[in-house]
Image 1: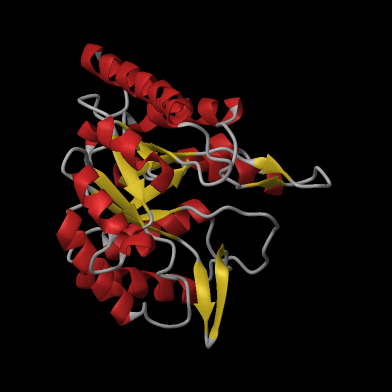
Image 2: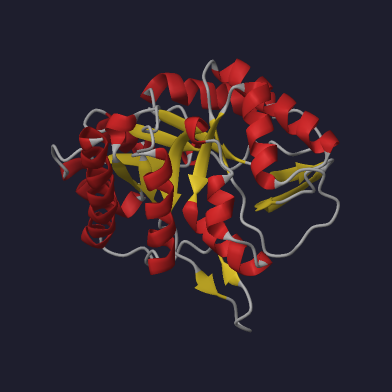
Length: 285
């Protein structure tokens, strides 16, 4: 039987927190639910959003999932942004902090997206340096999320699994495994999703994400849209992952066509049931 994920195993399953669900989230009592937000929406000194976040943090663990450090960019992470993020971390004391293996800014240009890159030796050095600078400033370990792929990029020196493994070795960071990203990328690039998951170093996984996806207009590509229920194929991959690495904090993401809170709680409970079963299997081993 696989050893359990070692970081924050007590967290179980959580939900992405949306403003329309603040009151519902605040009312949740005693079931172990935790919540994740994009810190960029809370990098302020006050106001109603931050007040709500602090109120929910008083009752539940929080996780901060960043989208703007641009760790694969050709320059250091923005110092002002890092300092503001550090202040928020000190204010709400999140259980987890994570970012994406991607870039948004390059030179003087900014793109409102999380963009992939060739996994070259130069990129490895650049990404490792940016992660290390971020962790040094924040004063804590962060988890790095695997990207979503829509087309084959030429010029890789590393497989993605080896690249992630080497990033972990060089920086001491952890990994956030987004199972929907794996499912979508495997479909779009015609790769084996189970082999991808098996290449991920299990002892580095700090968090797992589950989300829904959509099909593009011509039906050829899957889109990591976060606007639908989690697909059965993603649930099966998730089961494969936790069978190998053991129970690990798992987040249900929904960013578009957000349903009623109880619908998300139902998906959260499905994930929690799988985690609980994994814990039971560990105890019997």
